[in-house]
Amino acid sequence: MTYNSQTFNRVLLFFLTIVAIVFSFSCKKQAVNLANQEQLFSIYQRAEEKIVVDIDSAILLLDSVIFLAAETEHDSMYVKGLFRKADCLANQGNTNAADSIYSMLVTKSELRIDSVSLNKIILHYAHFNQLSGSQEKAHELCTRALAFFKQNNHEKTTVLGLIYLSDVYTQQNKFTDAMSVLTEALVLAENLDDKKSLALINGSLGKMYFRNQDYEKCLDCFNKVLAYNTQLNDIENIAVANQNIGTILLIMENYDEAEKYLLDADKVLSKAGLGSKQVHVLNSLGALYERQQKYTKAIETYNEVLELNKTLNNPYVRSNVYTNIGNVYYDQRNFDKTQYYYTKAHQALVESGETDFRVYYENMMFLNDEQKNWKEAYSWARKFNSHSDSIFNIEKYKETENLRTKYEAEKKDLQLEKMQIEQEKNKAMLLKNRIRLIGISILLLLTLIFGFVYQRQNRQKLQSYKDLVKKNQELIEINTSKRQQALLAVPDKTEVQTSGGVDKPVLPSELVQEVKLKLNELIDAKFYRQAELTLADTAKMLDTNTSYLSQIINDVFNCNFPSFLNQLRVEEAQRLLKNPEYHNLTIEGIGTQSGFKSKSVFNSAFKKITGVTPSFYKHN
Image (cartoon, rainbow, N blue to C red):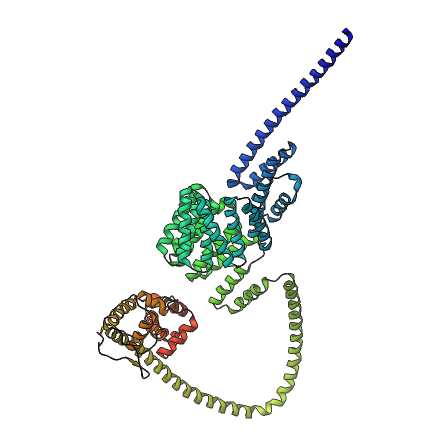
């Protein structure tokens, strides 16, 4: 009995010792894991802070997170580190490496990612493919993730998925589908009062309206984006919204407002230290000043971009800015500086490793064409046309050069042979020289007579055209006076209006007078200079309908609306052509200023009404 008791006590003591050792090891391991976890979170937080200022350092820190998470079997941090690294690589333009990581996260089941996180990664991977140009794959992934989130009532993530899907449809030119999913997203986001999503949705809608050149609706959307981001105090996106609004206003030629928004964007980005975003805003500002012909201010703004880029050291930005400065000097016809900056733009592209120089070739082609260096212009044109193809054209070029060399050698041999034949012929031709000289003398005499007659007729024709120009100048004032008298005259209440023998409804004299007076005011305001102007637009300005307006124009001026509009535009063009302030504009520029859509339409209408071309009118 004593023996059994002692044995039992020994076994119990041994068992308790083992339990104590295991417990001690477990506590120690738990303490180590806790320390590793804290270290993981600390490194990850440092990586997040570095992403904005130094993405390369951020990637190195994320590599440390991934390694340490793998060592400690911390699955969630391992996945998080990989996901964030893929995001950074995508932002750097390293799409192959990013795609490899995204694909691994989506396909490897041993990573033990929960369903919600996995579908969020799939959604992000879809967006990555959309930005990379793989629209079909993006559509497949986005649809797959959306199905999960809709089924599990994850409304906020569903909104984000719908926004991504709309981007895919937009890239595929399926605008109806894009608008449909954005409308669905908008309803969900408004129900959730999710301001961040509402900002994204309105941004996507704005881009769609921009593509369709519906700038009013586009502007409305971007103003909403600005309002939402202001509520969220999202500094970067406030600046982006200001830039977008400024760009739209620039296109709409509302230069003062455009400058205000672009300067606001520049101020916000400068304060936040976001130089990579700021360069785009300053480029837009430079374009604005160039459009306003504020050339000195435009160059100063572009130089600010170059100064910012010293820190960024982005050769693409440098090349773009040099091209813009070259364009400013081109507008000023300072061709030496234009060529200098175009060349610097090309050098920056070479430095970046870029091989697509089509913009440079095209610019040099136009520059030499403007300088009448036809041979150089042709050379640059050939480079531009052949550059889009690859090795095939390089080989073709070598082959062409070899054929040209052979042709030049063969041509020289033929020239030598021809010279020998000519020497032999010269002896036989000596006898014929007298007859030939007589023939040449007669021909010369006839040529002189013909030239004299032709010159006299041409002089008379030129004089008649000049008289026609003078008459047209006189007619401008006469037509303007008659038009004003017709528009200001009080219509006869009892007058019966007919056209082609058919009675038309008699319009109330008060209505006719009101429309005529408003039309006179529109003419004074030069409404006809709007290139896209239609009868409906004009009727809307006059608070009437198209039928009434068309009938009044027909009754008062005995012509239809397009003819009436062309008459006004041609008279405006005549004034501009004789105005020294517009001598720097081309004929096409004068036509555009007068309201014509194209040079061909302008030339045709001008010749029809005045009897001469715009070019002749300008120089005579």
